[in-house]
Length: 607
Image (cartoon, rainbow, N blue to C red; front, top):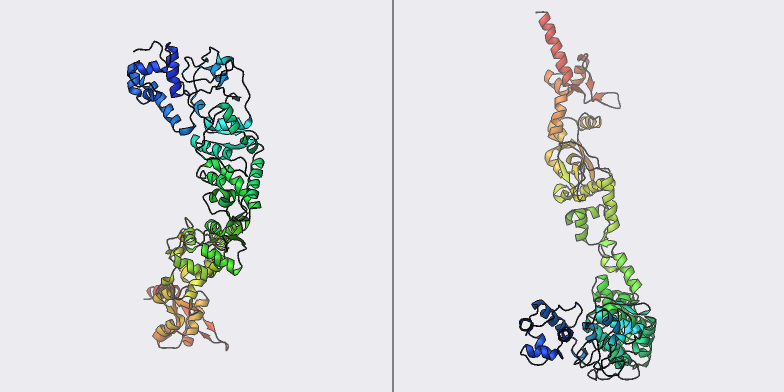
């Protein structure tokens, strides 16, 4: 059979309504004639279960039939909440387009969210139900045009329910919470839970009790929402308060005190649609319930706005173990409120403000791992920085709940800022060393390393390259080595050792160093200041000066006698003794060379 009039389904049209509209447009007595033409059983399921076969039999586009099947499959997920035997229509929607909207098939839908009016499921003229079997969608079997029916405005609660079921969103001013992207089955479960036991003193009916079949019955079923959703959330909270008051006083959990009503709500806690109602229950329970909160599936929702939480939840938020909090409670460092649990048991609650204060205080401290990452140094160098006082470390931090680690973050920031502000970039090829490389293998003792790091921390020792992490800052090795003993001792000699090696008096060498003629490094050796002269420094000294004692020894005379014969050659570096005597004089190599050249010229002039 080929239909005369074919057309696609409307975007919001129900699957069954599409085939009924096709039947009416082609002057068939009912949708059953379409089923007969397809050679299938006389049922909607026969038409909708085989869209490809129906499209070939009736000459329809496959996509049209597939769309109708998808719409019907979605409605089938409503299970026992799908209308059977009669239609419910919005007369104002029919005036715009005569087709059956899929949302109208839901048994809980009583109003049109678009026009704010109640649906009709009976004829205004003859008061008979609008049966599925009627020939035309827009007319009753008596011939009355449904578009001529008067409209009755819907209440805010009815619009809230209908919007939630039809679109998944519900925003009605002054009525119920705002809802978004709510699944139809979740919305239906929430509505059923709120309406099945409106009176706290009356036990709820069985869940398999007969569902409302007509719009008027459904309006009566939804009537409790008129009060519960009005003036949200105060009316609903008053309802919860009454349930707490009438519940068994010996029960110390919400499950026991609120009974089946709350247990049905708790089953929906995985869905966000139930959270406004669960939070309202939690706020009332916080103020009026003397039992335990936060021990069931709704704990996560209730605790979001709770003023106090169980010790277990507090431990989770703070980031410590439950046993640790119990230990702090027993020491008196954590203020808790005991609550009876069961017959003889006790649980403890902590104020949320106290938990937040602890969390905020713990953020001011860091673990060693975090501190090393922030500075870019290995743990050993961090330990040396702490020993030097550059970074504050609390050894017994675990005894204080308000410390999240041993390292004070403020000290890390101060140390970093000082290093950044004390940089002195130098274009030099001298040997450098990075801060993260300063470890025990470079030092003679820990006191020397502490001294070097203190100089860095105070800015007395400036970085010549400050890029990346603090650990990557580079310092001149010669500046850092002044605080170290072992590396320099391996390279050079102390003043005493140099005196023994060269035969120069200790006082003379010290005088040369003090006058800047002989360069040296000041290092700490076993906690005492010590001067070390490297071979490079001593060779540089000998290239510029020769001790007067060495010249006198070569000439077989004394230093004092030789000093009187040098004439214009200047003697420098002498140490003046208390008696006026001079010791440790030096002669510049340049002066000796100048005099030698002059003598050679004189000899050449007088052969």
